Amino acid sequence: MSISELITDRHIREFSERGVTLVERAISDEWIETLRAGVARNVAEPSERSRLWNRDAEGRTTFYDSQAWRTIEEYRDFVLHSPMAEIAGRVMGVSKVNFFFDAVFIRSPGAKFRTPFHQDEPYWSVEGFETSSVWTPLVPVEKRSALEFVAGSHRWDKTYRQTNFGALTGDERDQVMYDPADQRDDFPDIEGNRSDYEILSWDMQPGDVAVFNARMIHGGSGNLADDRDLKVFNTQWLGDDVRVRFRSEGMDPDHSEVMKANGLADGDKVGTDLYPELWRR
Ligand SMILES: O=C(O)CCC(=O)C(=O)O
Image (cartoon, rainbow, N blue to C red):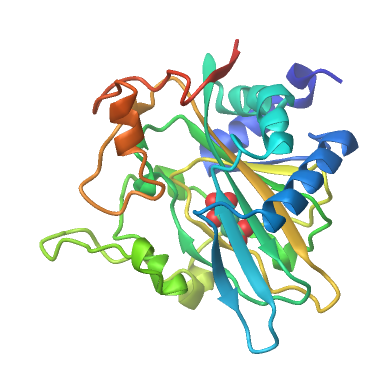
């Protein structure tokens, strides 16, 4: 089946209205095998950006790494040659797609740690509505352990003081010093008031992907049964309206220096070899 047949009007409408859509059987078994091999290599050779977000009393861990696509050849192959760019482009309904970066979330069997609810775009060195993150589990995942999304939150038109992921790691390099004059509201307590929100998640098989807008509030996953692990590869994609945006605090990953070195200034369209255009309608 071609990608234009795979992505239906329902996916496009759900992504636009609810901020997330599940695309089943989007990625072939071969690509999943490629990504699993990449994850094995990545865990053996973590980048300097890798972090252990959590290690519990039983030694169960949640490992994070990002932007490894230039060094892990399996990731690079997937980013450049899999149908993911076209899937992201067609779901977003844009005319072209640039690749932004990749991330992995690896939990050992039984890990309970859940990622705090957050939005992605406020951490990015770019800004725009036409963005997508694609959460791609490489193993079967039960709904109770899958990433959760607050339906429609991409259209709340509100940015909050974001979760300080540095509090998870305690690592000096991750701390965000928020400006005391920052007038933004604190991040809403979604977990403590779950019944106030429509929270979406699904049972997923390897090959299924959740495509979500980078303004969506999302979090969770983890909460694994004792015999289940979780390996997730995520790719992030930029559409037509995205522009470079240097923020005064909290960029993670902070691309401002490398962007400037490549001639990109605040307000520019993304592009250059840093963010290759990988699909055009
Ligand atoms: O899988 C997770 O624990 C977190 C995923 C996430 O925040 C993301 O893909 O942006």
